[in-house]
Structure formats: structure tokens, C-alpha cells
Amino acid sequence: MSKHIHTLLSLGDSYTIGEGVALHESFPYQTIQLLRSKGLHFHAPEMVAETGWTSFELAEHLLHTQLNEHYDFVTLLIGVNNQYRGLQIEEFKTDFEFLLKKAIHFAGDNIDRVMVLSIPDWGVTPFAKNRDAAIISSEIDQYNNVCENMAQQYNICFVDITASTRLAKEDSSILAKDGLHYSGKEMSDWAEILATLIMQQIS
Image 1 (cartoon, rainbow, N blue to C red):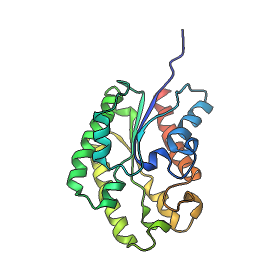
Image 2: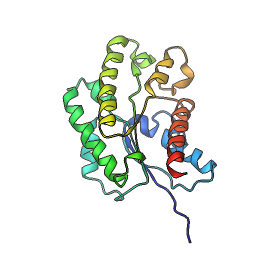
Image 3: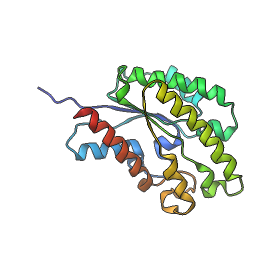
């Protein structure tokens, strides 16, 4: 009997594809590498994500993209571009609920296999040096409150990576060379959390 090869679908934006670093350093790929190192069988992650996407653009893309009907695990990380563009948070709330429901559907309606990641705080990066970091952080917190509350409403695991991204103020090694996105080192921490959560579901 052939072994089941697990699948991971990652939905998001530049943080999901690992903008600024090699593809294998993105958190979905590092998650799979960790799981494979534990002897688990996984296909390469499938990513529906693009730099600059808002929640609406991700939702629109999902409506017009042919994907597998189900995946064993699904991650969702979206919202920074809504905040960056100054879009209405109420619209984000509507989009995010739609995306969360889609993620649950892709996971075969198994809520234990969906993971929402919080939005990183780019306000402390060199990219934001001429902007008001306090305002950015406050707005990121508001967006993350929406994500966390919605995740709780649907009993979905919420993974807070925002706190560690705020360490970029003192530690530039967690940033990619573009001074905005994150290094493979930082994303390895995210991958460790996700791999642990996934292993708990498989074992």
C-alpha cells in the first residue's frame, strides 16, 4: 500500500512567498523541510500568494484559480497591504471571513488543520524610516485583532509572529536584504511553530 503524501496550501502575500529570499527559505518550504526531516511524507507546498496582494485580491484570485479540492493543511497570512494602502478595516473583516471559510473548505472542513498567522509589523523596518512607526504598529494591531477574533470564532489556531518581527528594530538579521521582508532565519522560527502544530495533527 502506498504511503499518503501530505499536502500544504499556503494563502497570502509577499510574506508567504518569502519576498527577498530564495524560495526554499520561505516559511511554507521551510515547514515542509522540517516535516520531511522528521520522516513525514509531504509534497512541495502549493502557494497562492503574490507580492502586494490585499485580502480582496487574494479572494478574487481564489475565485478564478483551479486548485485541488482538498489539502491536508492550510495556512493563511494576509492583510498587510490593506493596512499599507489605508483600506477600510471593515472591508478586510468581510474578506478575511470569506478567506477563512475558503481555507476551512480546502482543509476538508477540518478546522484543526487550518492555521492563521498574524501580520508582521513593518513599521520597525528600515523601509518605514520616514513613517510614523507608532501609527503603523497600532494599525497592524487592529488588523491582527480582526484576524485573531475571527480565528477564535471559527476555532482556528492563531499563530502570533508579530512580536518576533518587532525585534527587527534591534536585530537586522531577521530582515531580508530589502529591509522590509524577512530573512530565512526569521521564517525558520515561523516554520518551527507550524511544523510542530502539523506534527501534532498527524501523530
